[in-house]
Amino acid sequence: MNIQFARHRRLRSSANMRAMLRENHVRVEDFIYPIFVVEGENIKNEVPSMPGVFHLSLDLLNQEIEEVVSLGIKSVILFGVPEQEQKDETGTQAYHDHGIVQRATRQVKEAFPELLVVADTCLCEYTDHGHCGIVENGQILNDPTLDLLARTAVSQAKAGADIIAPSNMMDGFVAAIRHGLDEAGFEHIPIMSYAVKYASAFYGPFRDAAQSTPQFGDRKTYQMDPANREEAFREAQSDLEEGADFLIVKPALAYLDIIRDMKDHFNVPLVAYNVSGEYSMIKAAAQNGWVDEKAIVMEMLVGMKRAGVDLVITYFAKDVARWLKEDQ
Image (cartoon, rainbow, N blue to C red; front, side, top):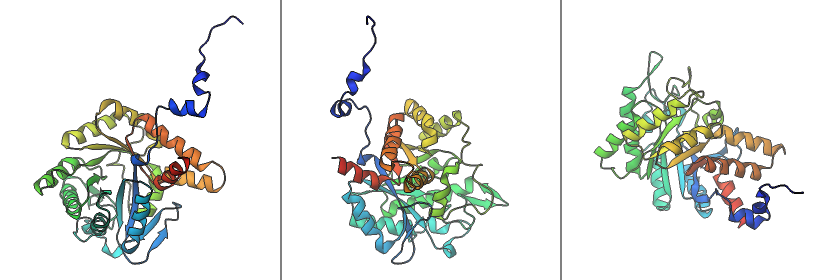
């Protein structure tokens, strides 16, 4: 047969050949593992909509961190879940020096000083209305919220947080937090901004975990419309100009095009948040025997790396760390 064509299969001929030529890799160092810390004692309650994810009280937190460290995971992000009676209209516990995240941060850094602790900086878990800012006459007020966010970030930095990760999507939140940190002597603390955060249905299980569902309305006046692409450039650009050191795109799976856009246009570390809905869908399908969990999770994560992310916040971090060890 006298025809000419390219023989691409030569470079896929064996497992070692494929491994040698693999362009993107998932590494345990890429992961930031989310942990939900609650008030009380001897509490380890599984989140109903997130199999394998737990509410942990401080007395059990170190056991969890020991496992995380033993698996080679280098960073965690802490979310606090206060008691219902501790919540108020301005989210006081978010910026209290003895708030749940502040105490958890001090505890983790004292026992595991080399572990990087990222502090989620928002008010929604701490407000009685579940919104990410001060509410007046049914409106979420932007500018009055900024001072509370700066106070929250400073209190988290004082507690020992290595990275501040504001997730509230108020206009000017990075500038306010950067100013507050610098004034308090924390010029060295970086900001990992949830710069591109969409108003997504994929967050449902997280609100179960964080007990932060809005008591009225929704978050569409401050989180982004899922239909919009150009808006992501504006949000990311303004956050970088205000002092962000990392950019987060959230969610990840339905927004890989946005991740690639951010990677192509901005030369800073890029983070994907592999959110709760993405996690729970796979867990549910795997529990029903519908998918190969390991194969589909690894394919999803390498897709995020291929799209351009440097780091991934993921509830799968411990699972994947174990799989990577087994493969070695």
